[in-house]
Image 1 (cartoon, rainbow over the protein chains, first blue to last red):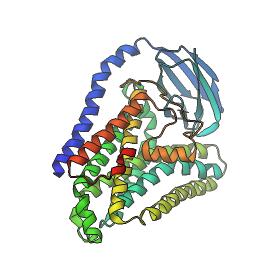
Image 2: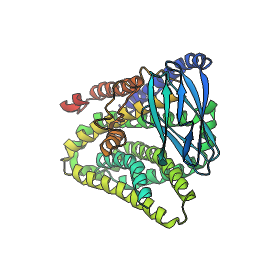
Image 3: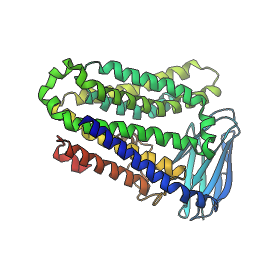
Image 4: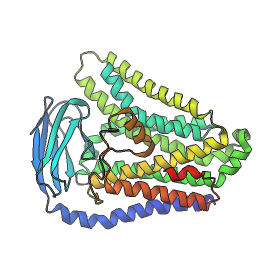
Length: 119
Length: 274
């Protein structure tokens, strides 16, 4: 009985894995059409403060941390949360987004906010 | 100091709540303290190591290494929790009948105990690495590090305190009902983790999103509110859930209910609320 239960859990995980694998080729074709954007963080300011991206399209945003402290790019509305090491950069894929404003913050310094606007 | 306290508390709360449910679920099982503490210790050590390699991890696998790592860790925990829920389904009746005698029977508890110790470790690992990085960020801009450390430790203690209060409330529930309740909570926790994993896989570009906000309840319960944080720990609550997140949540609940039923479950009728 225990083994059977473990087997079921394993099957569940395998199903997730299979679903991911099946989706991988589709997303790599999507990624060829995406455009690249950059946001930098320096001295408690994101620049640009408002990044405009096309709506309805997947975009790649590179987030660069030019400071000496770790930061975390976090956006509840975009469902993204990612640490950026000092003098490091990360890649965040967002969208396709509906037109509108999506705010984000440095989760380690909540006063530092920015917006991604999809048009 | 207050900033450190609040932010560490916020990050540690999720892990504290998950571990509280685990402690309640293993009530009466011999050696559980040792196992769960070991899990927390391993998770904390792992968090320190993970914090060092965050940059390398982020930039691996085409820039989505961190997302894939988080998804893998979450799905691993989902698997372990699922196994436990189903195991409880098949053994819960005996356990409830035996009541307190269970504590003497070490062998009955060891396997699920190991699984739950590992779940504790993965939870501390994920939340802990953020705490380490956040503290690093605060320390880099501070003249005096001592107040920050004190604040951080107080934050951890506060999170532990909330867990302890909840635990004391839960252990008032009679043992048979307690296991039924913790089983339902673990199902919700597992389903919530599966939903979060789905979001990480979307962020990595491995899964379609199926809508980036199916609904928006941020005016009622925002992600940043304490209730939002607690619900995030218990069921992966997001004020703006994605379609795939909801699918993974519902799929996990459905799979677990079916599996638990098939193993002579003690699932109470109130599972339909999930």
